Amino acid sequence: MRPEASRDRRALRASRLLRAVAVAAAASVALVLSGCSGAPSGAETPDAASRAQTAAPTPTATPDPFPKEPLTPATRYVALGDSYAAGFGGGAEQGKCRLSANGYPSVFARKAGIDLVVNAACAGATTSDLLKHQLIALDDRTDLVTVSIGGNDLGVAEIAGDCAAGKAAACRNEVTAALSLLNVLPDRLQTVYSAIAQAAPNARVVVTGYTLLYDVSAPGAPDFQTSAAINAATLGLNEVIRQAVDDQRAAGKPLTFLPVDFAGHEVGDAKPWLNTTGADVFHPTAAGYAEYANRLVQLLGRAQ
Image 1 (cartoon, rainbow, N blue to C red):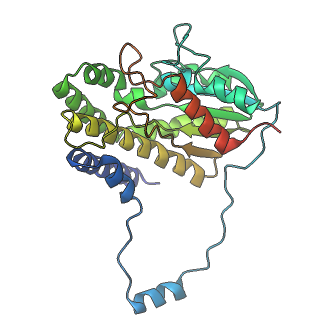
Image 2 (image 1 turned 180 degrees about the vertical axis):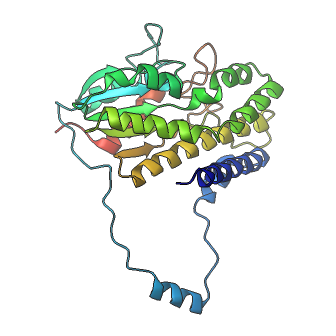
Protein backbone atom coordinates (compact mmCIF):
# COMPACT_ATOMS: atom_id res chain seq x y z
CA MET A 1 0.00 0.00 0.00
CA ARG A 2 1.22 3.48 -0.88
CA PRO A 3 2.18 5.61 2.19
CA GLU A 4 -0.30 8.34 1.26
CA ALA A 5 -3.12 5.77 1.01
CA SER A 6 -2.24 4.46 4.46
CA ARG A 7 -2.28 7.99 5.89
CA ASP A 8 -5.63 8.71 4.25
CA ARG A 9 -7.13 5.55 5.71
CA ARG A 10 -5.90 6.39 9.22
CA ALA A 11 -7.21 9.95 8.92
CA LEU A 12 -10.62 8.64 7.86
CA ARG A 13 -10.74 6.28 10.85
CA ALA A 14 -9.77 9.06 13.27
CA SER A 15 -12.41 11.43 11.93
CA ARG A 16 -15.09 8.75 12.20
CA LEU A 17 -14.15 8.04 15.80
CA LEU A 18 -14.18 11.72 16.76
CA ARG A 19 -17.65 12.12 15.26
CA ALA A 20 -18.74 9.10 17.28
CA VAL A 21 -17.62 10.78 20.50
CA ALA A 22 -19.72 13.83 19.78
CA VAL A 23 -22.79 11.68 19.18
CA ALA A 24 -22.12 9.58 22.27
CA ALA A 25 -21.77 12.57 24.58
CA ALA A 26 -25.11 13.87 23.37
CA ALA A 27 -27.11 10.68 24.00
CA SER A 28 -27.34 6.86 23.76
CA VAL A 29 -23.67 6.18 23.11
CA ALA A 30 -23.86 2.45 22.83
CA LEU A 31 -27.02 2.30 20.72
CA VAL A 32 -25.95 5.06 18.36
CA LEU A 33 -22.46 3.73 17.76
CA SER A 34 -23.42 0.08 17.49
CA GLY A 35 -25.99 0.98 14.90
CA CYS A 36 -23.56 2.87 12.69
CA SER A 37 -21.77 -0.14 11.27
CA GLY A 38 -24.96 -1.71 9.97
CA ALA A 39 -26.47 1.37 8.27
CA PRO A 40 -27.90 0.44 4.86
CA SER A 41 -26.54 2.12 1.76
CA GLY A 42 -28.70 3.95 -0.74
CA ALA A 43 -30.78 1.84 -3.11
CA GLU A 44 -29.42 1.31 -6.59
CA THR A 45 -31.43 2.06 -9.71
CA PRO A 46 -32.48 -1.03 -11.71
CA ASP A 47 -30.01 -0.17 -14.49
CA ALA A 48 -27.12 0.26 -12.05
CA ALA A 49 -27.98 -2.96 -10.27
CA SER A 50 -28.17 -4.80 -13.58
CA ARG A 51 -24.78 -3.50 -14.70
CA ALA A 52 -23.19 -4.41 -11.37
CA GLN A 53 -24.61 -7.92 -11.55
CA THR A 54 -23.35 -8.37 -15.10
CA ALA A 55 -19.88 -6.95 -14.48
CA ALA A 56 -19.12 -8.44 -11.07
CA PRO A 57 -17.56 -11.91 -10.95
CA THR A 58 -19.22 -14.56 -8.86
CA PRO A 59 -17.74 -14.32 -5.36
CA THR A 60 -15.93 -17.35 -4.02
CA ALA A 61 -15.76 -18.37 -0.40
CA THR A 62 -12.58 -17.25 1.30
CA PRO A 63 -11.20 -19.72 3.85
CA ASP A 64 -11.31 -18.42 7.41
CA PRO A 65 -7.68 -17.80 8.43
CA PHE A 66 -8.64 -18.56 12.06
CA PRO A 67 -9.10 -22.35 11.99
CA LYS A 68 -11.75 -24.02 14.14
CA GLU A 69 -9.38 -26.51 15.70
CA PRO A 70 -10.39 -28.26 18.92
CA LEU A 71 -8.33 -27.65 22.02
CA THR A 72 -6.55 -30.56 23.69
CA PRO A 73 -4.90 -30.99 27.09
CA ALA A 74 -1.59 -30.56 25.28
CA THR A 75 -2.52 -27.18 23.76
CA ARG A 76 0.29 -24.77 24.63
CA TYR A 77 -1.17 -21.37 25.51
CA VAL A 78 0.65 -18.07 26.11
CA ALA A 79 -0.97 -14.83 27.30
CA LEU A 80 0.43 -11.42 26.37
CA GLY A 81 -0.58 -7.85 27.05
CA ASP A 82 -1.26 -5.23 29.69
CA SER A 83 -3.03 -5.12 33.06
CA TYR A 84 -6.22 -6.61 31.64
CA ALA A 85 -4.26 -9.68 30.55
CA ALA A 86 -2.24 -9.72 33.79
CA GLY A 87 -5.43 -9.84 35.87
CA PHE A 88 -4.81 -6.60 37.78
CA GLY A 89 -7.85 -6.00 39.95
CA GLY A 90 -8.73 -9.68 40.21
CA GLY A 91 -7.20 -10.02 43.67
CA ALA A 92 -4.06 -11.61 45.12
CA GLU A 93 -1.83 -9.96 42.52
CA GLN A 94 1.85 -10.78 42.65
CA GLY A 95 5.09 -9.23 41.41
CA LYS A 96 5.75 -5.97 39.65
CA CYS A 97 3.52 -7.02 36.74
CA ARG A 98 0.55 -7.55 39.11
CA LEU A 99 -0.30 -11.03 37.85
CA SER A 100 -3.36 -12.65 39.36
CA ALA A 101 -4.53 -16.25 39.33
CA ASN A 102 -8.01 -14.75 38.96
CA GLY A 103 -7.05 -13.09 35.65
CA TYR A 104 -8.73 -14.39 32.54
CA PRO A 105 -5.69 -16.34 31.19
CA SER A 106 -5.46 -18.54 34.29
CA VAL A 107 -9.23 -18.96 34.64
CA PHE A 108 -9.66 -19.76 30.96
CA ALA A 109 -6.83 -22.31 31.01
CA ARG A 110 -8.43 -24.05 33.99
CA LYS A 111 -11.91 -24.05 32.48
CA ALA A 112 -10.71 -25.14 29.06
CA GLY A 113 -8.31 -27.78 30.40
CA ILE A 114 -5.27 -26.55 28.47
CA ASP A 115 -1.67 -25.74 29.37
CA LEU A 116 -0.99 -22.09 30.21
CA VAL A 117 2.74 -22.11 29.54
CA VAL A 118 3.21 -18.56 30.79
CA ASN A 119 1.31 -15.34 31.31
CA ALA A 120 3.85 -12.82 30.04
CA ALA A 121 1.51 -9.84 30.41
CA CYS A 122 2.43 -6.90 32.62
CA ALA A 123 0.37 -4.08 34.13
CA GLY A 124 1.17 -0.80 32.40
CA ALA A 125 2.54 -2.44 29.25
CA THR A 126 2.32 -0.56 25.96
CA THR A 127 2.68 -1.96 22.47
CA SER A 128 6.37 -1.07 22.64
CA ASP A 129 6.78 -2.91 25.96
CA LEU A 130 5.14 -6.01 24.52
CA LEU A 131 7.52 -6.00 21.57
CA LYS A 132 10.56 -5.55 23.79
CA HIS A 133 9.78 -7.89 26.67
CA GLN A 134 6.99 -10.37 25.93
CA LEU A 135 7.67 -11.96 22.57
CA ILE A 136 10.37 -14.13 24.12
CA ALA A 137 7.55 -16.23 25.60
CA LEU A 138 6.54 -17.41 22.10
CA ASP A 139 8.03 -20.07 19.84
CA ASP A 140 7.00 -22.44 17.09
CA ARG A 141 5.48 -24.82 19.66
CA THR A 142 2.95 -22.22 20.84
CA ASP A 143 -0.57 -23.24 19.80
CA LEU A 144 -2.67 -20.38 21.18
CA VAL A 145 -2.02 -16.75 22.10
CA THR A 146 -4.33 -14.22 23.71
CA VAL A 147 -3.43 -10.55 23.82
CA SER A 148 -4.93 -7.41 25.36
CA ILE A 149 -2.95 -4.33 24.36
CA GLY A 150 -3.38 -0.74 23.21
CA GLY A 151 -5.00 1.05 26.12
CA ASN A 152 -1.78 2.22 27.74
CA ASP A 153 -0.64 3.74 24.46
CA LEU A 154 -3.51 6.19 24.97
CA GLY A 155 -2.71 7.00 28.62
CA VAL A 156 -5.62 5.19 30.21
CA ALA A 157 -4.01 5.13 33.65
CA GLU A 158 -4.15 8.92 33.91
CA ILE A 159 -7.70 8.93 32.57
CA ALA A 160 -8.79 6.36 35.15
CA GLY A 161 -7.23 8.28 38.03
CA ASP A 162 -8.80 11.65 37.24
CA CYS A 163 -12.15 10.28 36.13
CA ALA A 164 -12.51 8.12 39.23
CA ALA A 165 -11.58 11.11 41.40
CA GLY A 166 -14.42 13.14 39.92
CA LYS A 167 -12.16 15.61 38.11
CA ALA A 168 -14.61 16.04 35.26
CA ALA A 169 -12.74 18.69 33.26
CA ALA A 170 -9.39 16.87 33.48
CA CYS A 171 -11.11 13.59 32.69
CA ARG A 172 -12.76 14.91 29.53
CA ASN A 173 -9.55 16.64 28.41
CA GLU A 174 -7.58 13.41 28.81
CA VAL A 175 -10.23 11.45 26.93
CA THR A 176 -9.98 13.96 24.10
CA ALA A 177 -6.18 13.68 24.14
CA ALA A 178 -6.44 9.89 24.04
CA LEU A 179 -8.73 10.06 21.01
CA SER A 180 -6.22 12.23 19.21
CA LEU A 181 -3.71 9.39 19.57
CA LEU A 182 -5.98 6.84 17.92
CA ASN A 183 -4.59 7.71 14.51
CA VAL A 184 -1.13 6.40 15.47
CA LEU A 185 -2.38 3.22 17.13
CA PRO A 186 -3.23 1.19 13.99
CA ASP A 187 0.40 1.04 12.85
CA ARG A 188 1.55 0.06 16.33
CA LEU A 189 -1.04 -2.71 16.54
CA GLN A 190 -0.18 -3.98 13.08
CA THR A 191 3.47 -4.19 14.13
CA VAL A 192 2.54 -6.08 17.31
CA TYR A 193 0.23 -8.56 15.60
CA SER A 194 2.73 -9.24 12.83
CA ALA A 195 5.49 -9.80 15.37
CA ILE A 196 3.34 -12.23 17.35
CA ALA A 197 2.50 -14.19 14.19
CA GLN A 198 6.17 -14.35 13.28
CA ALA A 199 7.29 -15.42 16.78
CA ALA A 200 4.54 -18.05 17.05
CA PRO A 201 4.03 -19.20 13.44
CA ASN A 202 1.82 -22.16 14.39
CA ALA A 203 -0.46 -20.35 16.83
CA ARG A 204 -3.94 -18.94 16.63
CA VAL A 205 -4.16 -15.46 18.15
CA VAL A 206 -7.19 -14.09 19.99
CA VAL A 207 -7.19 -10.32 20.51
CA THR A 208 -9.51 -9.29 23.32
CA GLY A 209 -11.34 -5.99 23.41
CA TYR A 210 -11.83 -3.65 26.35
CA THR A 211 -15.21 -3.71 28.05
CA LEU A 212 -17.29 -0.55 28.33
CA LEU A 213 -16.96 0.92 31.80
CA TYR A 214 -20.19 2.80 32.46
CA ASP A 215 -23.91 2.19 32.39
CA VAL A 216 -25.10 5.23 30.44
CA SER A 217 -28.78 4.31 30.34
CA ALA A 218 -29.74 7.46 32.31
CA PRO A 219 -29.00 10.57 30.19
CA GLY A 220 -30.16 12.80 33.06
CA ALA A 221 -27.43 11.58 35.43
CA PRO A 222 -25.02 14.34 36.58
CA ASP A 223 -21.97 12.51 35.23
CA PHE A 224 -23.61 11.35 32.01
CA GLN A 225 -21.46 13.40 29.64
CA THR A 226 -18.22 12.24 31.25
CA SER A 227 -19.36 8.61 31.38
CA ALA A 228 -20.57 8.70 27.77
CA ALA A 229 -17.29 10.24 26.61
CA ILE A 230 -15.27 7.51 28.34
CA ASN A 231 -17.48 4.80 26.81
CA ALA A 232 -17.13 6.42 23.40
CA ALA A 233 -13.35 6.47 23.75
CA THR A 234 -13.44 2.76 24.65
CA LEU A 235 -15.60 2.04 21.62
CA GLY A 236 -13.14 3.97 19.48
CA LEU A 237 -10.22 2.00 20.87
CA ASN A 238 -12.02 -1.29 20.27
CA GLU A 239 -12.84 -0.31 16.69
CA VAL A 240 -9.20 0.51 15.96
CA ILE A 241 -8.19 -2.86 17.42
CA ARG A 242 -10.88 -4.68 15.45
CA GLN A 243 -9.84 -3.04 12.18
CA ALA A 244 -6.19 -3.88 12.78
CA VAL A 245 -7.15 -7.51 13.38
CA ASP A 246 -9.28 -7.51 10.23
CA ASP A 247 -6.30 -6.24 8.24
CA GLN A 248 -4.20 -9.12 9.53
CA ARG A 249 -6.95 -11.63 8.75
CA ALA A 250 -7.18 -10.26 5.22
CA ALA A 251 -3.48 -11.01 4.88
CA GLY A 252 -4.13 -14.61 5.93
CA LYS A 253 -2.96 -14.37 9.57
CA PRO A 254 -4.91 -16.57 12.04
CA LEU A 255 -6.20 -13.75 14.26
CA THR A 256 -9.67 -13.01 15.57
CA PHE A 257 -11.14 -10.20 17.66
CA LEU A 258 -13.12 -11.07 20.79
CA PRO A 259 -15.39 -8.33 22.20
CA VAL A 260 -16.40 -8.61 25.85
CA ASP A 261 -19.51 -6.97 27.31
CA PHE A 262 -20.25 -6.32 30.98
CA ALA A 263 -23.83 -5.14 30.29
CA GLY A 264 -25.72 -5.05 33.58
CA HIS A 265 -22.45 -5.09 35.52
CA GLU A 266 -20.85 -1.78 34.57
CA VAL A 267 -20.04 1.13 36.86
CA GLY A 268 -23.40 2.47 37.95
CA ASP A 269 -25.04 -0.96 38.06
CA ALA A 270 -25.92 -2.73 41.31
CA LYS A 271 -23.18 -5.36 40.98
CA PRO A 272 -20.36 -4.01 38.79
CA TRP A 273 -17.70 -6.37 37.52
CA LEU A 274 -15.23 -3.48 37.64
CA ASN A 275 -13.27 -2.01 40.52
CA THR A 276 -14.61 1.46 41.29
CA THR A 277 -11.96 2.73 43.73
CA GLY A 278 -8.28 2.24 44.51
CA ALA A 279 -5.22 1.67 42.37
CA ASP A 280 -7.03 -0.91 40.25
CA VAL A 281 -10.00 1.34 39.46
CA PHE A 282 -11.75 0.52 36.16
CA HIS A 283 -10.06 -2.88 35.98
CA PRO A 284 -12.24 -6.00 36.10
CA THR A 285 -12.89 -7.80 39.35
CA ALA A 286 -12.51 -11.56 39.60
CA ALA A 287 -16.09 -11.85 38.32
CA GLY A 288 -15.23 -9.61 35.37
CA TYR A 289 -12.21 -11.67 34.44
CA ALA A 290 -14.34 -14.80 34.72
CA GLU A 291 -16.59 -13.30 32.06
CA TYR A 292 -13.58 -12.80 29.78
CA ALA A 293 -12.69 -16.46 30.38
CA ASN A 294 -16.27 -17.54 29.61
CA ARG A 295 -16.17 -15.68 26.31
CA LEU A 296 -12.93 -17.43 25.40
CA VAL A 297 -14.50 -20.81 26.20
CA GLN A 298 -17.48 -19.90 24.02
CA LEU A 299 -15.12 -19.05 21.17
CA LEU A 300 -12.60 -21.87 21.49
CA GLY A 301 -14.36 -24.61 23.42
CA ARG A 302 -12.79 -26.98 25.93
CA ALA A 303 -10.05 -29.57 25.57
CA GLN A 304 -11.17 -32.78 23.95
